[in-house]
Image (cartoon, rainbow, N blue to C red; front, side, top):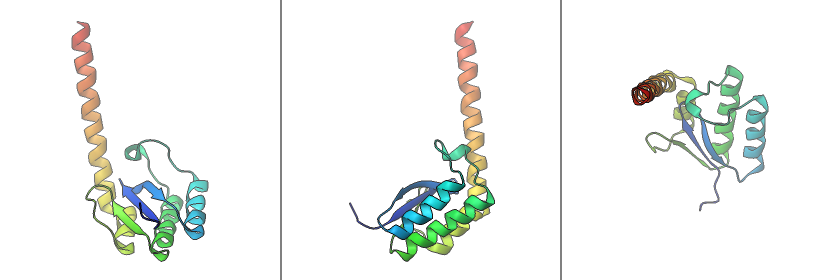
Length: 118
């Protein structure tokens, strides 16, 4: 396992983090103090303040020589790519697509359950 700081992003939000340096720990504490999610990133919607704190966390990881990764493509991102992903339309589009998928799965499960009860 690498000793470098690392974070991964999914649905335009923080998916996972490995903290090795005090600067990254401080940036993460700030992000978490604003109010984060615990559970599915799909249903989490970062506020503008949380997005700003996440961008600060991205900066801290990069400044420490760490890596930032897109959980969907497994591609390592530059700071600018990571910030665009957090702030931009791509994350919003993935979130909307994910919500549609979950909604369709839930409908299918409910329909299957009601058919079994008949």
